[in-house]
Image 1 (cartoon, helix red, strand yellow):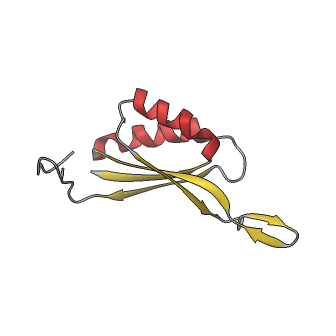
Image 2 (cartoon, one colour; image 1 turned 90 degrees about the vertical axis):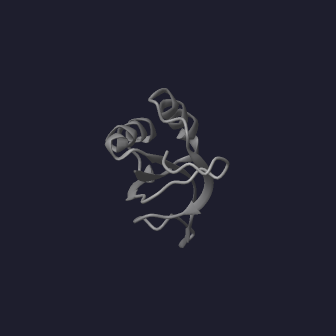
Amino acid sequence: MKMIWAVIRPEVVDTVVKALTAGGYPAMTRFDVYGRGKQKGVVVGGENYDMPKTVLMLVVEASSTAGAVKIIEDNARTRSIGDGRIFVAPIEEAHTIRTGELGL
């Protein structure tokens, strides 16, 4: 299993979520954050300010990682600075609280 963290622009979230759902990845967690990347945010009057972003977090089977990442990239890309980042990390276990099941 892999965890995918996608830090994306808030204005593309609905498009990305719909595409992931249509692509077979309906389970995800979304939260709004503020942050900055290599550009150190937006400079206004000589001051750097963090930008609003949205993080989508999903866990997928390892064999499905490339497909989910491609969907995110294709639907979040505006070709402008600040489009975001995707991070992929291994997940050792997943437990369902309600049933006690192990795995996805």
